[in-house]
Length: 348
Image 1 (cartoon, rainbow, N blue to C red):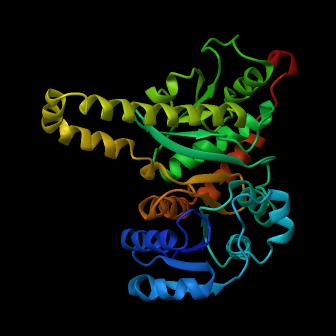
Image 2 (tube, rainbow, N blue to C red):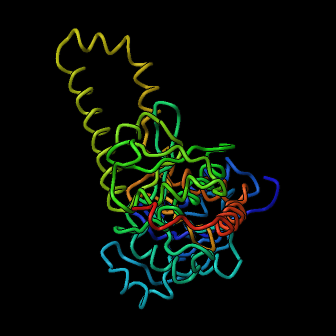
Image 3 (cartoon, helix red, strand yellow):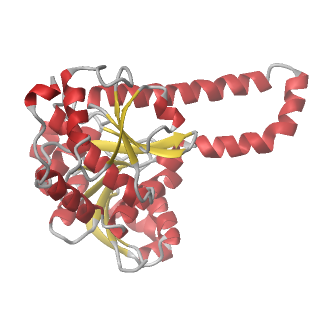
């Protein structure tokens, strides 16, 4: 790495914490030598684990906390009563400039509420959005929002497009990613007033992004665009449907190869190709949803992931830091602010 990066970790978040968190941090350290960690959690549980991971222990600054945000805690309750929790103190480390980013596998709603309160939103961003990336026929794509904002107006969608564009450049390394608005059709007259108004704004000559236009549901796995923009309700339904379909496909394939002796023999010939397919679809490789739009980097790991998946989430935070995500989005927002507003009548 070109400079030292420090990531704050909520060691108590996730179904397999804290072992999963520490082992994931060790994997991330092997991938990013020189990485430093501020780890927050119950010291009496963390010390014995760190003793078995000497390389990681040398890169860790341990902070004891006895409070933990539970998975079933309501965000409002966690925000009020969890000020000394491992999750909140890890976020505070970013807010105070002590860490470059925070990663947690804990309660999603609580993490969003705490991060929004402590880190604040970037100037020009009304609401943060949840973004993640997943495999497509052409490689990988970014999608947002995945559930933070059930209802959105046109300006929210425009802001999400800017956030997604900067994220794709920072994490996926794309020079000029294409951005599409998810709609019920690709024609300009399709969709509701909100998506049509957002499309008009994004087509502006002053828009800093490469706007493709409207896309449909089947364009998501096809990889028609690099960034898929939609409201949180639609995005959450779409990503959960995709995850369920992938799981169903895997189960059907496994059952087919167990069906008969000839199928089992066929598996012996196909197992190398199937191993590559399994690696390509491994959800751990795409672990790490990001709360975009905040004045700091906050990454949400899946709560049931293992150490490898958590390491990928840490890697997302590192990539965003190394590639100056926050600076990129500030520049893009300034350019958009300079663009003339779309005529109201044209948006309807």
